[in-house]
Length: 205
Figure (spheres, rainbow, N blue to C red):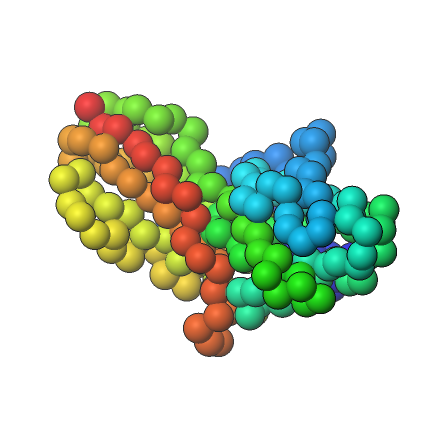
């Protein structure tokens, strides 16, 4: 297990946002591990959905050696050399985002892990609170979260939380319609980042 992963697991169980403390969501305990198979020469599935706080197990079912290495530039995971029938578990990932990875032995082998943003309510009356969560813990040292939202009827996402270290916020939307929210993990001192997460929608009535 990497030092970065250890820091993530040991992060505080509470996150502070705007003076309000939000209890951290349950991490990977009790959640089944997501499985990704390595075969000659691709990953199955090539795109896997992963819950916040969940781990991923890579298993080599091929006849030759493979690995899985993060392509984001954040150096989040690397299974190392896995011979036939070898296994390695990585994660949990820092938070919501899409994480591309590849096999260093076979560059044509590409995969993605997609971690979504969550909302405790999918539909709320205007002015009612909803908790939006993009991570189960605070950002690991040296990393931050960027969160964007798209207003009802708008075409583009706009920044909502930038350089955030907390993993969640409580929000009181007032504009009626369907909002869209996405997030990513970024190097606090640079531009390396995951891709944007799958979009989470909240309908305000």
